[in-house]
Length: 164
Image (cartoon, rainbow, N blue to C red; front, side):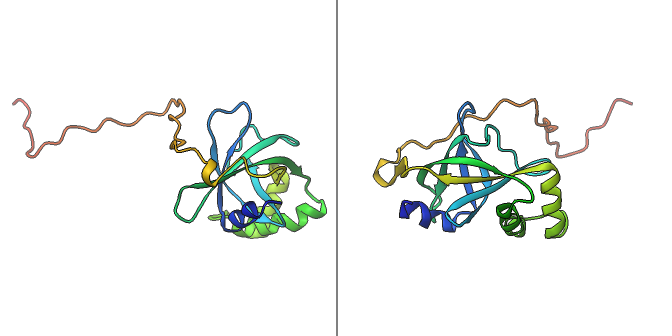
């Protein structure tokens, strides 16, 4: 494994995933354990569209200064509840889950019933790192949504009286 991947991922709590067929990337909270990145997705947890068992994904990580420092290719593998790897990783990941609705054991049980736990393992050296990083911002236009913002009423300094 490339030492830059290992060093950058030890400090990462958030990563940006780019999957084939999904425009732009999306952020996920994650945990680096034993040379692989782990994340949970499903009901009541973060969405991870396009992530499939055996699929490929690019993982981008930011550095201490807030900018992207590394992008590396990974292979995604879903862990099965009850497997030795699941039993080892799920409690560690649940302990890092911010604002979890309940104790760690309840979270792990809920994940086993309605969520998927993925292992993203590096498959090659970084795609982008150091001088090979793009100077572009990497920003993408917002995705379309039916949500709207309420238009505020105009500000009035004094109360306007109605017709008498």
